[in-house]
Length: 195
Image (cartoon, rainbow, N blue to C red; front, side):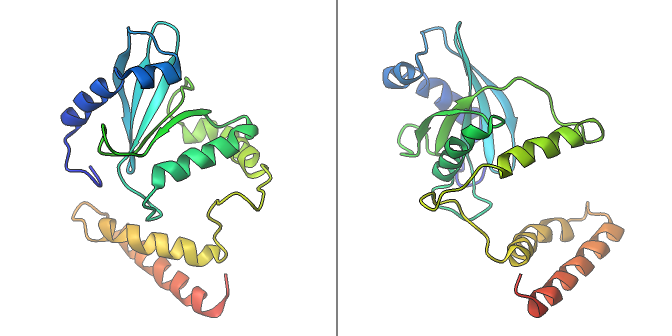
């Protein structure tokens, strides 16, 4: 589970205790009939639904950082806050990166009902959402990470992530071959270009 040796059961118990805190409930205007349920787990986050009789939120608990940030959840909170004006990202309401009651940083964001993306059906909609996000004007005072050399950034990210697949017995040999060739091409392109 990333930065913590907690099991999911242990984290569930900590989350259920955490949401009972008066300050937490007051900030989100939650009543005493709070329900907590597991929503989903990604590579760097575990998500819970937090709800009472009036409202529903998502609690995102950060377990790691793809960008090697020590304050990943704070970065996500600030980015989501900034992107709210796009109209296609969840609103964020609460951030706790103290790691006192919960050993991992977390944020509370708006619950947006829906289903998992179906690539064959939703590709156009996904592109429209990304276009709206990328149309948000970024002011100079926002500390959003900007990759000045995008090819280098992607190369570094791939170089860090691909070995997991390449070293796995479960990986398809044909796919491994393509990925290894792709990395060599990207490495060569980086030397020739300043991108």
